Image 1 (cartoon, helix red, strand yellow):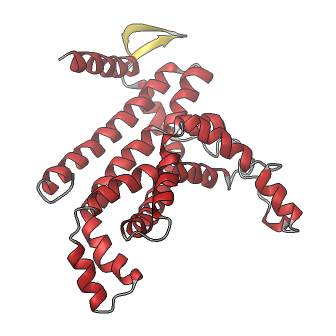
Image 2 (cartoon, rainbow, N blue to C red; image 1 turned 120 degrees about the vertical axis):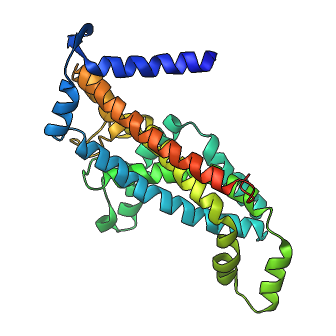
Image 3 (cartoon, helix red, strand yellow; image 1 turned 120 degrees about the horizontal axis):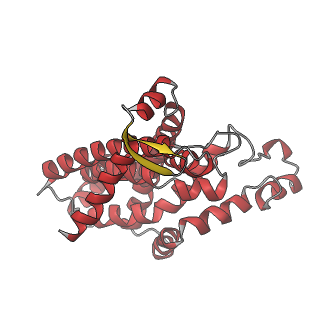
Length: 277
């Protein structure tokens, strides 16, 4: 009940703030006739930030799943040095997102270690100002997220893969299956349910946890190239002092998140008893 009161009250206040008139940083009790929502949708304020968030989700989640299935399979199969790889992957998940963002911003800087090395090797055509180029910046953000999430995803995929009967792999190997075929026809089908659930939970996570990465790495730039939906709330509220508009965008983000939560619950209820955790 305490949690319901704490979070429920804040959610109600969020909706209230989006529906009343504001005088600077002070809200009034006057209904605004959905003015802020009309402004957002009529002028297309929310379209571009939402599209960038969706693009990041579309790039990050398939990449994480593909790499995780590969790494989880090889660690489960106990390739040479698998303990070291498992430890190395886990290490990325315990590094705070702000620290990871600072480190990668330095590494991928125009005059950072990576580009300096490329210049030293005479590969200047490969030099990219990852965070200063409007077309490249969003891919740099995706890389930071992928790098940091691989550890956690590998852990949960391995937990599910540990339930796979070894006899299935043994039978496939007797029939002459290669490691690639084992991964495709044995490992991935066994992980299919967890992949579905992970896709939804990761979508929710990425949609609501881009602010730290964007603020530290690009501050929404260059221009507005990396101004995603979550950062846009901060930008409108605190930098543009348009609190009503910021609250309205926050409501939109909340509604999208709740839709995804409902999808997650439905998937979880269908998968109950099928070996997913």
